[in-house]
Length: 191
Image (tube, rainbow, N blue to C red; front, side, top):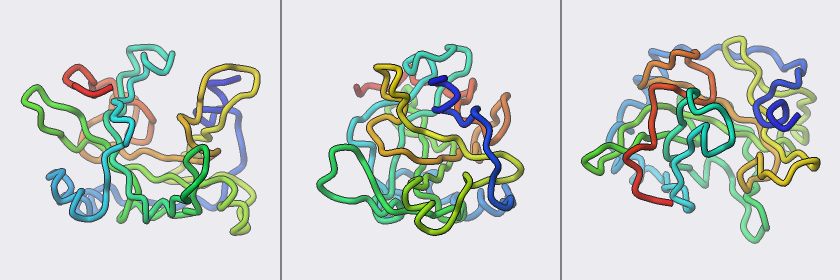
């Protein structure tokens, strides 16, 4: 059940399907190949400095990794003073994503591999949405802790929906899946 909660496998009807043109999104976010441009535009490196891999999450290692997350606090509308990371974002616009994913390279540089959006379930429902967002025919992943486990399925965040787009690295599992077997945390020097 934890996997079902964490990766949207529990099944839910979704709001009207939004369509994203991958080429247009890639063009709109191309400048972020340079991590310094991302930082200049308000993105910050995940304060935990973790590189997320399927294996580290207790999932099959062959699923690969996500990489290091760079978040945009203003786009996520992060709230201050909360025990777990929380916010008010309902942003589903991939031309201005709230999260960028980078793969650490052997020389210490970061290579942009994907963009991601995250909406907070409470804010999403308060905006009048009853079901999870859907993009290009895929319901976004539901990330919330399962009270029956000790795991932190939501990674220190309040319940949210998220969706990855592997705009800059081919993903054998599909461009919208959360993990990518072609991404590695091998060269990550952080925690």
